[in-house]
Structure formats: C-alpha cells, structure tokens
Length: 284
Image (cartoon, rainbow, N blue to C red; front, side):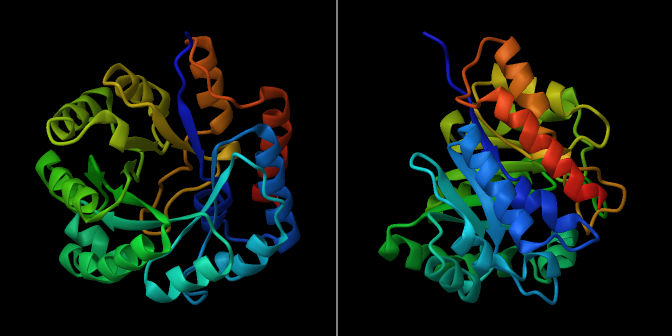
C-alpha cells in the first residue's frame, strides 16, 4: 500500500505576503481556486494581520469570501492575536495558525514581543478555538538558524514545540526561516524533537536559500515525518531575514515524493498550471 505524504500548501499566504508589489484580490482568489482543483487537502489561504505591517494581506476577508471551497480541502489563515482570530472565524476559515519563534531576537523583530509574551497572546486564541471547535496549527520559526542569534539550540525548539502542543495545537510546523538548515542540523533537530513528541504531530517547513530544502525534507521523511509545507512557484521569503529565498517549490516537492513512490493526492498536470500562474504574480 502506497504511503501518503501531506503537502500543506502555503503559497497564497506565506508565498504572496513577501512580494513587494500588491497582488490583486481577484488574482489571489484565482490562485486559491487553481490550488483547490489540484487536490490539496490543506491550503493556507490568507493572514488576518494588521495591514499596517503586512499590506499584502489587507484583503483577507474578501479573499475568503471570493474563493470556491472544495470538499476535502481545509482553508486556513494565520491569526497573530484575538482580533485576527475573530476576523478569520467571521470570514469562514476552517482552521487557524499561530506563529512563534525559537529565537528570542527573531521573536522581537517579527512579532514585537518576547517568546514568553507570545505565549500570552496564543492562550486566548487557543481557548476560544476549543470552544469554536476550530483546529489550531503552530508555527515555530528559526528552528536551526536565526539571522540575529546564529545557530538555534534544539532544546529551545523543544521547549516551544512542547508548550504549543500542550496548549492545544494539533500540529507543529518547524520552520527553517532563512533556509540555512543542512542535512546535519536538520537531523540533529528532528532526532531531538522526536524524543518529546510523535512524528505525526510535526511538519517540516523549509526555505530553499541554499538549495538544500529537498535534502532536508528527505531527512525528515527518514525520521517518519509525513507533512511538509511548500509554496507554489517557490514564492516567499521573510521580510525580517534579509537574503532569505522563498519556500521550497511545491512542484519540486511533489515530483520528488512521487519519484520516491509516495502518494500525495495532488494532480500534477493542474499543479504545473497553478505554478505558472503563481510565478507570474511574482514577476508583475
């Protein structure tokens, strides 16, 4: 029986948010609909954040209102605070995500608070989500390297991951935010984290700055992880990490997995068309 690997498509949010030029709402809707037709089980559709900090996501509610939801696909949004959570739920998202950091300096730069203060923001979101029966996914950035603090100690990642899981996140996405992870640092990280939580509670999120993302995904596969974030067309980056390239390209990940005889449920012929459209948005 062919083993399934879940691709968590983050292009519409994590991919588009770092583009300098604003993408038209109708183009965002078109992209999400094209991705839905590819058969993804999870699409991170938008982010309910302050338009002052992320103007690209100012039309989040309109995007959610405009997409054609597909049965079998979960449409999620990033929600940094209760205001964002309430707006997301009101817009019909199926799931929300919160994001923290394994690096103190990056936490200050990214969300203007300490790691500990970040947890105080997450608590009311998760408590409300339990009442609403809404799943919450947790992101951790800078899991192997930070642009400000340098190498990240796996123990710090473990502390953040365990706490998010204990608070109620159903899955923890481990983010190589600046794309500096290597086979060695990824193996060290994953083998350490797996001492404290099962592989089915983890996802890999790799940026491809040094063209090592696919190799790092291979390390995670060997360790038993079966969920990976990727962005159509390789869009993305990080506004708080100069030089960081985009997320690993969904097409490359799907092709690699299929060559390895894993099943993804993604229709490759439709995926290529979605990738061409996504790349055109980045070129405009």
